[in-house]
Length: 441
Ligand SMILES: Cc1cc2nc3c(=O)[nH]c(=O)nc-3n(C[C@H](O)[C@H](O)[C@H](O)COP(=O)(O)OP(=O)(O)OC[C@H]3O[C@@H](n4cnc5c(N)ncnc54)[C@H](O)[C@@H]3O)c2cc1C
Ligand code: SF4
Ligand code: SF4
Image 1: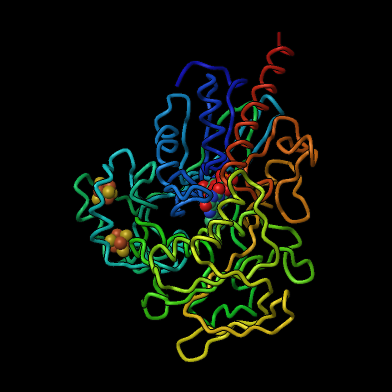
Image 2: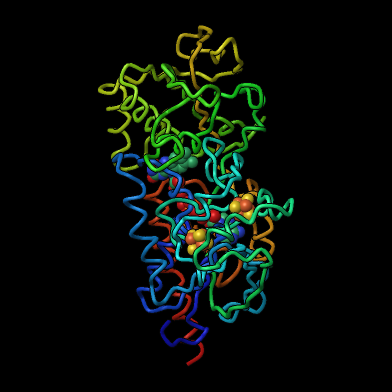
């Protein structure tokens, strides 16, 4: 890393497309960046995606060059599998405390050969990355393209760490990298400014009892669909029903699930679901040519460049069927999933039996975001996203000088808007750093 005083260093929290965009922009401009990512690898949600609207190009093809650049940039110091637990000091001279979580693998020895994952006997269905669609082993990496591509042990599921028997990974590791005694460690870094780019989670399906969660296995959320559609995902790109592994002949996609529903769930529009539901339905039809794809919507919002054309093509050329209406109940009948609702254009009730249902659930802040807001000393808005300084002219600044936000941590947005927001955050930080230099001169 190049010589620099701490007054030029920037902390970026979150290594999704927002965080890595801001970090690389700042690093290219000559600033040192300390990046903290809570997962073992950078990439964020894009690492889970298959192809992306509006161009249907492969998410990993866009993402991998950027994650590789982040991992190799001489001005970026990366702390994967770590969290920010404290921020002391003042704008321009913050001291950040970082917890490095125990991975139980000595990454300085590990070559990423994969032998441990291959031989680990413990299969885990609950790894959040695979959204219940596929399994991970108790020792795992996030994806074959992961940066860094080093494994961690899931301590809650490892046979040795929970029951004291196994040690297969230690036996097969050719470089003796497994360390079952490893504990969390703490480090401190001096930085002048902070960008919080911690992204989003999807509204939990458990909060959506009316949609059959827990009783109907063939109801999944959008990220589970992404994992199935991903060529490098758990089903190698095949769409399969969770209940019996069969290819569904009919799929219903329901938009606005938990969004735009102030009485019961979230009041806001999640902005991306109209587009990704159309994308999912199109990708499904590309795989199951005679399959029936029906989309339930409240309104169709397509405000990005090329988005309206994408939706037009979906109905006119790809044969997607749109029904305007809200589904009120989903239940299982035999091996079918039955939907009840109303077509709000005709006013007629709708009943439909399909093989699989994909819910476009609301985009929400990560559950830990409230605690991070407290640590950073910045406010959260009524929905839990980081509160911007001004709706129109200050979506990157927060109530605290020197602390900025980027991407979905501030509110739902697509990749194009996230990247623009993150580059703007990098630019705002540079203005802030120049101000510090002027004041110090
Ligand atoms: C089903 C689905 C399909 C989509 N398809 C498309 C598409 O086709 N085209 C498109 O333009 N957009 C699409 N999107 C939207 C896209 O995923 C987002 O625009 C993008 O991921 C936002 O990037 P981000 O960096 O803000 O957040 P994220 O991708 O969520 O990244 C945030 C990162 O921060 C990390 N983090 C969180 N909390 C902490 C913490 N406390 N400490 C350290 N690190 C932390 C996370 O682990 C993560 O790596 C889709 C979204 C969904 C849900
Ligand atoms: S010790 Fe744990 S991580 Fe290693 S192989 Fe056994 S179950 Fe898997
Ligand atoms: S077997 Fe050892 S070197 Fe190979 S990936 Fe696992 S921990 Fe790393």
